[in-house]
Image (cartoon, rainbow, N blue to C red; front, top):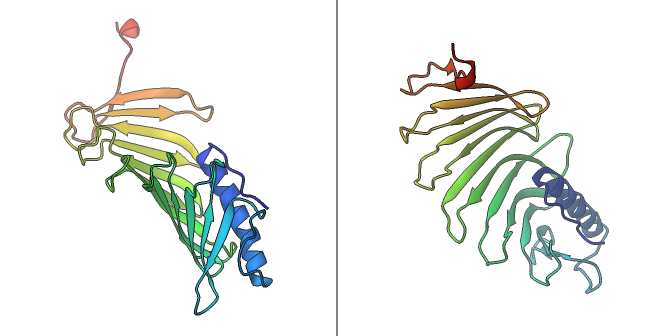
Length: 202
């Protein structure tokens, strides 16, 4: 059984978790290690307790492990992803316990500047659904982009266009994903006003 992968972040996470559960089930049934033709995921067990510690997988099939699920028995603690195969973790997803999901549920995620431990993007989840994102788009160590989600869809983006540490531009999105309103707060005092397109100005 192999782990399939998707470029879509939410879908690829679900596919990885699904694959993890298959291997956890095999482990509970007495399998101690993967055979060469078992696929691209390799379970690693604690030599003392026999509990599953890791699931190592090769998402792109190049023969190199690029995704590691750190396990506490049958529950995922976090998943580390090396998306460009440079040996460095590019994304780490953290999981917490869940009454409904024995493998756990995602709570937050971090994405790193390539080849470093500097975080460039923070994702926050509630009940496994993305609710907000903070991002350092200029890589200066300061958050300058904020995203808000409703029901898993992007509802609002705020941008710091002046480097002052506060949003000065806001984009509000409709249910269809289109921008329905643009607002500005040039002095960063928290008071936003609609931006009127120049063609509509009287």
